[in-house]
Image 1 (cartoon, rainbow, N blue to C red):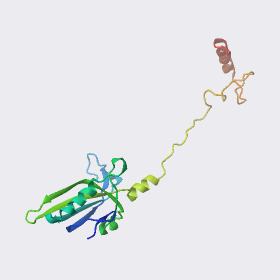
Image 2: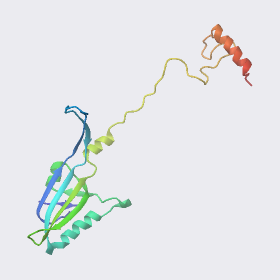
Image 3: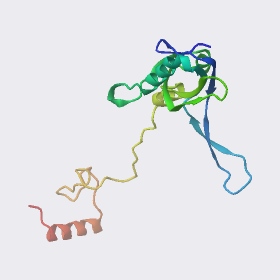
Length: 184
């Protein structure tokens, strides 16, 4: 099995790469025995890698540690282009190290059993979600006129700015309003 990260080959014996896709769902049953769930999206795919590195090849373990500790601009984890059959089958092109690395000594062989996880970066569901158009807010209006502005201004003959005549009661209120608060 071949595993290349940015063209650098990860070497080890008995290498196994396991692909995972986590699908988030929430239980909607409450206190009932209903089986309905709410789909909450796809999480990034991951590749769990396990391999054995003999003690004499400790340079290979150092290489993995160097790649895992590498950072890009701004202190973010470095992203790697991956070449691997399982990654290709899962549609994974770019990964970064996640969830740590473990290397424990084998009980019978003079070797480390190394495990690490690579997490997909810029996944297809993530790209689709970014391209999806957001629901815009539509303006709402109610019947009638807007308060304030020139739409409700009353003209000299007791007319509203749009040519609508005031009723007798409205004319009386207008006179009272003008008397109490004269316009300057």
